Structure formats: C-alpha cells, structure tokens
Image (cartoon, rainbow, N blue to C red):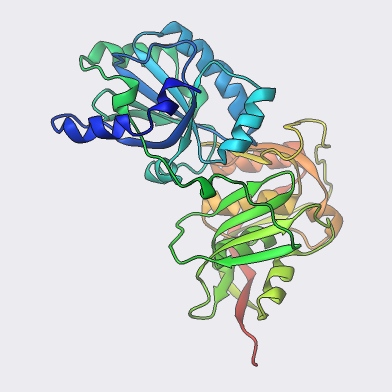
Length: 376
C-alpha cells in the first residue's frame, strides 16, 4: 500500500490548516499508486490525465505521458484519474502496468467539474490550482510544458495539491446485476449520460431521455417525454446481450410506457447510400469491451459499429438530427470508421470518398417519438 493511501486523512487536515493556499482543489477517494518516475514534492505543474480501463486510446496516451513524465521528473507530476471502481482498475493494472500515478476520482466530481465527455482528456494546473491548459492528453507536448514551467514560480507537494477523501467501503464493492434488466430511480440530478460497458453488464446512468436516446441511437430532440417522466435512473442490462433485441423498446416496455411516432421538420443531415464502400471491421481494433468511439475536436473514429451508431454520435456533436437509410443491411451492419466532422464540406468529401455516403444538410422531415405513461 502506498504512503498516500495510508494517510487518507492527513492531506485533508493540512488543507484546513493552511488557509492562505488553495490546497486540495482536486478530490480523490484514493491513490492506487504513486508515480514511479516523478518526485511528489515541490512541483510547479500538475497534470490530471482523465482515462478509463475500457478506453484503448487512453492506453496509447499513457505511453506518451510516461515519456513526458520522464522528461520533467522534478517539476511536473502526472496523475491518471478514473471514476471507475478501484477493484476493476487494480485488476486492469495487473495486466497493463504503468509507472504513472493512478487515482480514483471522488464521486466523479473532477470529471464533472472539468466537463470531461471524451477520453483521453487532460488538464494542466499550476501549483496554485489555476488551469493553464486543457485538451486531449496526447496533445500535451514537451514544448507546452516547458513554456508554462518558465512562467511559474510557486511549488506544491502531491499531498497538498490533492485532497484524499475516504468513502464508505460499501460504495467500493462492485455491483453485478442478477436480472436481465434492472432499473433504479435516482434522487439526485445527473447532467451527462455515463456509460459503463463492463464484461458482465451494460450500465447507463442519466436522465430517461438520455438513456433512451443512447439505446435507440436517436438524437435527443427526436424524443419527447410526458411531463414528469424525464427523471434520472441507473439502468443495468445483464450480458450477454441479444444482438437482435431492441434494448430501448425493452426498457420502455418494462417501465409500462407507450410510444407514438410523429414527424417534424427542421434543419438536419440526410445520408444517402446508393453504392456503399464501407470499411470492414479490420481497419480499427480496440479490443473486446472497450470504447467503440473516439470523438475528437474534429474527427470521429469508431470500431465495429453501424452507420446508425455513427449517425447518433454525429447528431450529438453537431446538435441536429442525422437521418440514415431505412435499409437494415446498410444502417445496421458493423464497420470501422474514421472521418472529419467539424467542417461540413470536408465531412462530405470524407464520407463520399471513403464510404460512398452522400451527406446533405438541408431542411428535412424526421421522426419524433412521444413517450407517455400507458393508461392503467
């Protein structure tokens, strides 16, 4: 056990005593390991690397950050932070060890505070807790670190910068569902949908609208819930999942809700596929039970997913409906993807040249699903 883990309450006491310094601005529930490269004392910069065990690009990012940490062992301290169950993380580290410090986020607070939605992501702080830089973890370069080091004079230790707050043991034990579908209503608000794609289950935490949208791969504005229905839930689907089963319909049926399809008009994107040239599933391989998407600032990559899946991700980042062909083979077949989305004309070129997809942005008619309680 590391020295930090043995001293769960000491950093909190230090934070309370030293009022003149903004110590403890990053809360963690525990450190699974300290850095095997960097000094934990008197660092000018701290970098929080947001990651998850299921995120294959995060592993590549860690290799880059490991090299970067070796270049600045005395002035920069990198902490890889995950909001996953520590038991799962420890199991993962036995298979894929790292020399970087590993910590567990306290109730996901840091992920929420810095609006982390896409992994790998990172935030660079000075010793006073000021954010100097935020972006994709692989984009933090030696030159960026050197520039900020020249501008900083304050230093802080690891124990003073991170506030280790213990949590109850029963929250550490990992829950595994016993039923094929389990629904738990939450009393607190959840801003963003979180997805846990584990070996034994799929866990979704968020509002009912977010969860149904994810399961059905439908843009959020294409779902209208009866007043009072859009509350927050924790949903478990036990694996193995039936590939032919509509999980959104299964959830709605279990909750005794009805669905009525209507139509609306508005700006959107329509995909036409006359002669598909889709990639096969051998172009990208991120492994089983790992991330299916990597959505960057301008590029979407996906491993073994359908056109409908990709359209859902695109609708989310562009904030407009994306309509795909009705043909099942075209819209639901599994493929690998890598295309630009930030500039529409460049996206059009990518999609047509690489996949045979013609994308049009125009006023379209799209389905809207109205969900309400069934009459008793």
